[in-house]
Length: 460
Image (cartoon, rainbow, N blue to C red; front, side):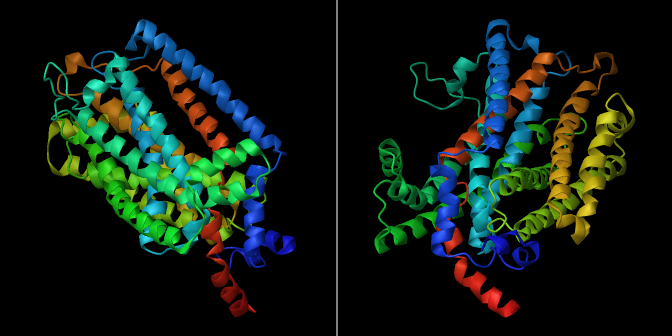
């Protein structure tokens, strides 16, 4: 089986490589969690996450003491890195929900090997995203005022504010994603409970498994709950980033007031989300020897989704420029012109190169079948999507209707420290996840074995 797992030509024909049995699938995935030997890669990744997390804590601590003035926020740009990073992180989380919910309802079985860590990626990305609106409040300890809780003064939040919309959209998204992820974990938690010899681990996994015994009744309830949660999560893929786009479209700021922002933002979210899936899956399969479970077919399908959504994003860029020209609105003309040739022209043309030009290499199967090239492409797309959010937000605010109030946003070291620190938070949570919980769904991968056997016989 080891030889077959390493053969990319065999692996690329099937969802999982031939030669696997129920026992070998369980052993390979559970051993990553239950073994006492941990690869150096994990310690390096966790250490990097902890260092960057400490940077984040230092930046937030100073923010609490001195206020948001430590960021580069100056008139007229009162939205800067905070909202840029919020939109970027929320977008990254969309791939996990799409893989978990929509592909489940569409019965796309290739999702079974990547859905678990994609769902975890969603939760960690939403956690990072939620930091920025709270810190941007100025008084983050009063964040609960945004919820319509019963209070003695009878004061309710302003439901016409996009900030309140974001609170409800993101909190709903995080809740449904967490439930979907946890419900899917229960059968595997029971497997770890039964296989571990550590008393504390057996107690912890047994508690989280909630008495799972694998009976017919348990499986029936599980399948019903999964379908219901998938049905709830599916509209969230479209609605959450649509609501985030409303933060901009309801404004009369040139460059924001547009009706195509909702589908534009949703496509961009899935684009960056699948880029992050590839950026995580490729190193993991190489370090932990999971080439037989996360095959070239998974990488190629993810690359195809990334290419398709990238073309939608490219179309949105063209429509944005066309709409500004077609409306004959001088302010919209100026907004697009300033993006292309103004103070932020370098960031604009870099995002065009990263999001439109570089991913065109994915048309070629030779590129899609090379994990190194896919990894590099995913990193380029992640950088480009961050630059896209930065240009949309900052350039539109820096130069609006009144030239006398124009200004240039200059990010401070604390802007960068807060942003890079959330990357550390993401890495810290993700590396803890792959060490303590199965990164691939054991029972879902085992359902692929009969299909893999049929494909193997058909190939022979």
